Image 1 (tube, rainbow, N blue to C red):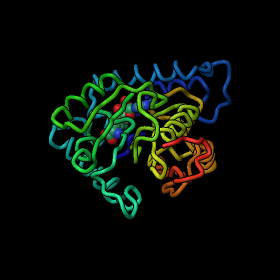
Image 2 (tube, rainbow, N blue to C red):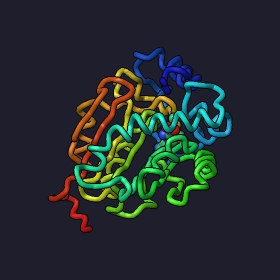
Image 3 (cartoon, helix red, strand yellow):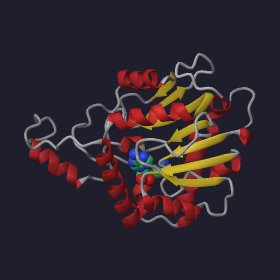
Image 4 (tube, protein in one colour):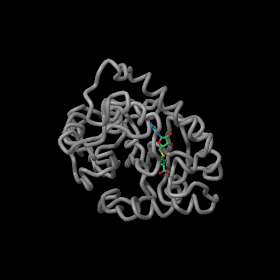
Length: 266
Ligand SMILES: C[S@@+](CC[C@H](N)C(=O)[O-])C[C@H]1O[C@@H](n2cnc3c(N)ncnc32)[C@H](O)[C@@H]1O
């Protein structure tokens, strides 16, 4: 799977042309600075359009046409590889997954949401796109321990503080065109996690990617040093990382058990 290179983004090409190529110096033709709300609205509009056009393809670009069974099976395989194989970090030595509450940021059409519902106590999916939320609600309607929420694209505002054990996100942050929004999610993941909880997520680690365009397909890259700053500023410990410098840069941010500098009380 290669979410960023399998699909050429025409808007990005146009922008690059205007700039005089990828290495061009930004000029008056550079896009104007947008507020977080504006970027969130653009993410919502773009992902609504993608979800309506061919949601399953934009969620998982490995196939253009996804029979339902194969689409959800691909989600089960992703969960097996990315969640089940990591239960040691997720549960620690003593806890059972059956006691844990998890959040999936950018749940899309619910491809990866069904299987965790069989493993964890409850699963909250959240997505910036109303269309994706509607598809995910429909694909998880038979699962009483799943709820799917429409997010604002930058925070977990609808969710309570210190109430979750795992915040997980796969092939979502690569599409977010603003480091400030990624930082905002890190801050809020820290808020909603219980002490000791884990934020496991993937970002675009290839820093040669142009980060000047407001492009909701090819998002903003995160360097190793920026990853450290994101973790530290949000109050996390960077416990583990894999794939730095690639488009699949995994980060494991741990909320410390004690000396929580933000002083949340649980
Ligand atoms: C490539 S899909 C991946 C979906 C899901 N993680 C999966 O693997 O099946 C990216 C998803 O992230 C959502 N998304 C993009 N930007 C987001 C944001 N800022 N906040 C929440 N969701 C976002 C999109 O609407 C889309 O559903």
